[in-house]
Image (cartoon, rainbow, N blue to C red):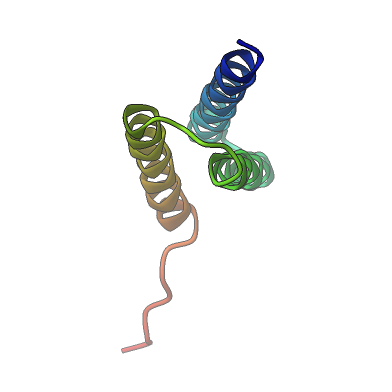
Amino acid sequence: MQKHEKTKGTVDFLHTELETARTFVAIARQAKVEGKILRNIVNARKACKSTRHFMDQVQLSEDEAAEIKRQLEGVENELAALEASVRPTERPAD
């Protein structure tokens, strides 16, 4: 019983970290000041990194692992798009 509770707590933690990352992405999208945008991108990245770290530290069921991985990849894709919009690639001068 104790193992189940520990795993459930960890799964809840992973979901909370993902929700935190999504919140930081949403704040960054709404922000008008570049510093606030970048700060929230960094915070979202930290939440994603934490999710990846703890995901590898606990034994999840196949369904749990697949769902968390899917959500994490979605947040990371949103972050990449957001970063690209903030820091457009430099184009060579014509």
